[in-house]
Length: 459
Image 1 (tube, one colour):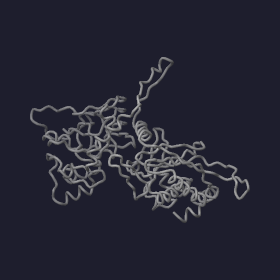
Image 2 (cartoon, rainbow, N blue to C red):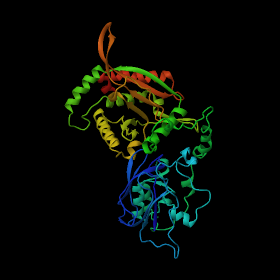
Image 3 (tube, rainbow, N blue to C red):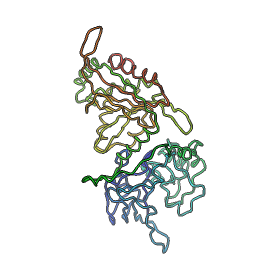
Image 4 (tube, one colour):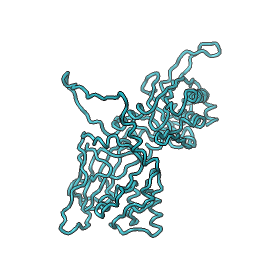
């Protein structure tokens, strides 16, 4: 019997909601065939079955919340169990739909890869928890199975301590493959060691769990005044709530506002949109131009392309430019990321925006498309509104809000003329940047957006 536990679905993801099962209890399933759809706070993903055989048990009906490391399926793969020993039920339960999280888990800080316990696990523990000892994508685990590699023995080189496909292949090339079903041993010291700062994070984080004068009172019974309905806060909407509370409580927000005269840029955009109809990126909007201008601004003002590590009191400056885009979906706000905007043309950025936005609205975003952002842009222009003060997408340090382009009378060379103005609001973390930095950053955006020739020349 094989107990399949929900694998690591990506950095910062600890749970998901069961959307759909592709199999039924008692039915057959092939190795790598779709087992279920799980919606995380970032995207919906299809989980393949790591084993072929007969499905003995499925844990969690559609709508149930399951956590990483919990048993979600038991598969009879033909492997023998101990003589006379009955099949054990899943070692961890599945929270029913709408059930609250354990209090200890709700505020648990994310400190990177899980560390092994101080004492070595027993043989039974090693065989039933192999999926939770290391962080690795399902595809990487499949490669390990095909090569006969015990993934727990592989030294991780990926970001955040993740085992990559190359790590597995290199391990296998060294002739260290283990027979399938071999008992795993405890990770080495190098695998379990974490930086001193990471090990201190849980203790340091407790300082943020008590905020003076912050007392959250229970809600009144709204039903006493009329009929109400209740809906569990799940998946993406729940993640948005957590991130926004973290951002607004932890980060001292400051906003700088200005307007960019995009009269010439709008005329240029419309001409190019006609020339590129039907081509990738042909639905040309103002957003790709703004992304290019933002990228140039981040080069000139690195503080807005950074993050502040409060546990070691260091500023992390990123030497790459990945711009996140807030996309409104029926399930909540999703922020897909356009990677490497300093190396992409405006048409390439436009095509990438179209791809990412479509996938987000269809609930088919790849997890990698939602990670690695360094700066975020939110655009309410298509929906209306003259301006906004956005909340920073923590742990980034700044976000740009775009309003609706409007024709307004302005004074140019002593004459009143009608120009198209784009409202811009930069919300930023005052711990890292000052008002003068924000003024210079936004002034650079305004300068480039006001002249398409300058924007194209300097980008």
